Every structure is written in structure tokens, then in C-alpha cells.
Amino acid sequence: MVMESTIELLLRQGINELKNNSVENSVLDAQLLLCHILNCDRLYLITYADKKIDTQIVVEYKQVIKQRIKGMPVQYIIGKQEFMSLPFYVTKDVLIPRADTEILVEYVIEKYKQEAYDNQLTAIDIGTGSGCIAVSLAYYLNCITVWGVDISSDALAVAQKNATKNNVQQKIRFVKQDILQPKANQMLPTNVDIVVSNPPYIPARTIKTLQTEVKTYEPYHALDGGSDGLLFYPILIKRAIKQLKPAGLLALEVGHDQSILVKDIIEQSGAYHNVTVHKDLAGIGRVVTAEKG
Ligand code: GLN
Image (cartoon, rainbow, N blue to C red):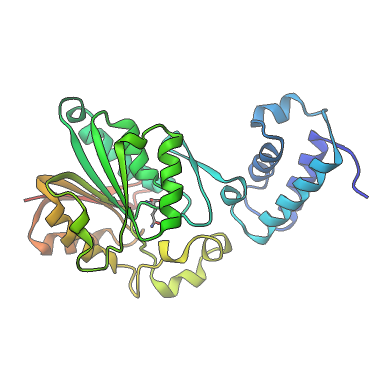
């Protein structure tokens, strides 16, 4: 029989179970999962630590703790993740937005925020997934239209929901398209200001070495960058030449050891200048940008 409990007791049990099963961030995860079940914020858990919890809640909490122990990321269990201080829905159909990707988005916003007050800008986000990049650009840049492209209808449905959730649906068009197909760019606008992408960039054979959370639960096609992880870059770099206006910006997220390789591919195309690697706080190149022409 499941006993009645209090918030504090239940939380302590959750933390212990996660800890005993080697789940990292056991305290935060246990809190987030309980907030999800109780539909409250973390402050509530502390303020009302003595509050009695009925058995139905205890049962539900134990179930989600079990899912987390199996390796399901907390974001898929609670169905959300914050990105650029904005709320995003996530499902198993989309990659969970990462802090690394904020480096790319912040750079683009910083570069264009002034211009976006005076001019109507256009951007294309290739492989939009949850829509985190497209939605953030639409949210933080004043006059912009963003085209979000993805091969997966299920991902596009999530991205559309995220555009609506953040009230930028009027500024975004979503298009289903396989960027690897030769005619893929036909439906997209040309003469655009910005092309961004966080493509799949994990080398195929490396995927099975990743943590369970990623390799078992995140969408495989959002991770798989072909045999060397670089499959998408030459295609994106070539496509962007067709879509961008002169001096338009190409901004690509890259894997932790790929920035120099991707910089070389861009330089070898001969179609860009100002090819620049942007590093994270640990000094790792995470984003490569270039201007057309
Ligand atoms: N653009 C999405 C993101 O950055 C999806 C990326 C992907 O699926 N590779 O999270």
C-alpha cells in the first residue's frame, strides 16, 4: 500500500532513488518532476514542504521517477525546456534545446538587433526541430520573417506550437523539406539576410557511445551527421550561397572538434569572407559564421 506523504518526504525519497541509481542532478530532477506532477514552481516545494500529498500524487511521482531512472531526460517527461529565457514544448520528436545553441542565437541577435528596427529581415533556419532558433530570432528581432525548415512533420508540429506559445506565429513560416534533396531549396526565399542551422553533427559510430538520455531517447536523425559527422556542412554551405543576399550571414553550430574543419570547408567554397569561429566559455569552438561575397 502507498502511504500518504508530505512534499518534503516525497521529495527526499525521489532524490534518494535517483541518487541510488546514479542519476546526475538528482536534486534538481527530483524537484522538477514533483513540480510537474503538482503543477507548481520550485519555490512552492520549499514554502509548502509540510503540505500533505494524497496517494494518487505519490503513485504518479513514483512513475515519473522510474522513467527518469530508465534514462528518459527530464525534459521529455515534463514536456518542456527553457531556451533564450523563453518556454519551449519538447517531445521525443525533437532534440532538446541546448545552451550551446544560445551562442549562435545570441550572436545573430546582437548583429542584427539594430538593423531589425529599420529594415524587414528574412532568415532561414534549416533543421528547425523544436523551433528554438527560429522562435528566438522571431521573438528578439523586431522586423523579421523566419522560415523554419525540417524533414520531420512531427518536429514541425512541435515548432509550430512553440511559435504560437511565444506569440510569434505571424513572423514564422514552417516548411517540410529534406535538405539533402537536390531541389530542396526551391520553396525557400532567395536574397535572405540570414541562414542558420544546428545540423545533426555526431559521427554515426559515436552515437552508441553517448549517454542513454541522448542515444536512446533523442531523435536519431537529429543527431546523425554521417560517417564523419560533417555530412550536412558542405550541403548547407552551398545551399546558403543560393539563398543569401550579398553580405548575408551564414551561422552554423558545429561539434566540439569540428570548428576548424567547417571553417576550412566554408573558406574552400570561395563564396564567403569573414569566416569566424565563436567559442563557448570553456574555449571550445561552437559556432562558425561567415558573410557571403
Ligand atoms: N534547431 C534545433 C535545435 O537547435 C534542432 C537541431 C537538430 O535537430 N539537429 O535544437
